Amino acid sequence: MAVTQSAKPLGPIPPGFETVDGELAIGGRRASELAAGGTPCFVYSRAMIAARLADLRAAMPARLHIHYAIKANSFAPLLAIMAELADGLDIASGGELEMVRATGADLAKVSFAGPGKTDAELAAAIAAGVTLNLESEGEASRALAIADRLGITPRLAIRVNPDFDLRGSGMKMGGGARPFGVDAERVAPLARELIEAGCEWRGLHIFAGSQALDAEAVIAAQAATLDLAERLAREIGAPLPALNLGGGFGIPYFAGDTPLDIARVGGALAARCADLPEPLAEAELAIELGRYLVGEAGVYLTRIVDRKESRGETFLVTDGGLHHQLAASGNFGTVVRRNYPLAIATRFEAAPEEVANVVGCLCTPLDRFAERAALPRAEVGDLVAVFCAGAYGASASPSAFLGHGPAAEMLV
Ligand SMILES: Cc1ncc(COP(=O)(O)O)c(C=O)c1O
Figure 1 (tube, rainbow, N blue to C red):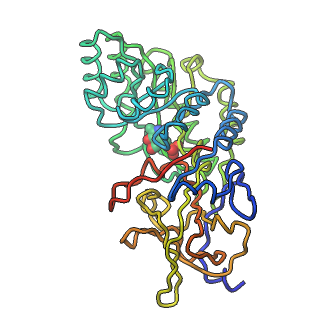
Figure 2: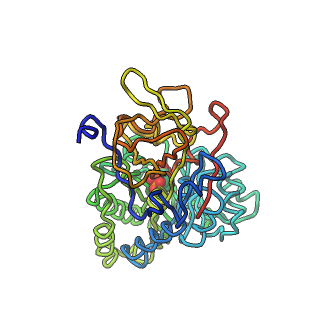
Figure 3: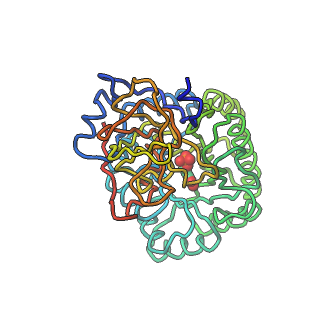
């Protein structure tokens, strides 16, 4: 079909969405109904999040704890579900600690990773009984001093900067010189110092990267993580009470991306868990995931406010933009801009008829949701759905830019 020949492909629409009366529907409700209260808005599906977690649990060894990294999406009602469904929550700031506290979650199941923790953040986390994943020797000594001042035994783990990274990951967080974690070769003396200081020793946190779709790469990173943890535990001279293996499970955003084979990852991990060396045998094992748990369960709905032609190209101008969906515009962690999965939500079943650009309302050429996409003909008033909006949409976009303000969010 000529219309698709000159088009750039769109990313794959995640499975699990329905069509009602020709429209995209989420949780049984049509896009036009969901958007009736105003656009742009984020819609997150409770059922899809629950199913994702259940499928993941079924694929992973039973002893593996699954933590949710709330940076991916901290919308309060969604966080409340994750506090129930996940075995732990990972936070990255004092602000996120307050969000978690507001859900009433058990703070003993919360861990705090991230460079640049201030004294106030350390004090709040220690007082709350949160496990600190220490990022440096300096942070460790501040944490000990603060705990001493508060008269509280701190729960401390060390975040390790491993000597490897997660192959094929969109964002590498380990290996080489990094602001994250303590270099592996310096971990053992620090751990001994913490144990001697009388902290509650919570073991190691090793996060090698993010957004990996290749099961073999994840399996290799997990194997290297277990090997490193064993070596470090032997150097420390004490078994590990807990080991956070990081995460990095990715989701398909772009044409050609295929879903991560979690059955393969889980099978390989189960085989390793069946035969763990003595220093890891009793360790509480966890992974911490953000986007994999919630990313595909979210849709960003934005309305077309203008349809215009410019020098032979069609532009569908929406009331949304990169101020809510920075990643979909290609400006968050990607080198080459490619199209996210996107559809005309109000003509979800219609065949492509034209090639159009879908842009946001910001006055910058960066504000683009789809470049030369094959779409049904859409008019002013139609709704555009940007998929994979459940993670790093509202929580990672500059909503103050140009004064448009944040988008509404809802859980259905
Ligand atoms: C320490 C840590 N944990 C978890 C995550 C979540 O990653 P993702 O959403 O890709 O699973 C990140 C992401 O940067 C991270 O830095």
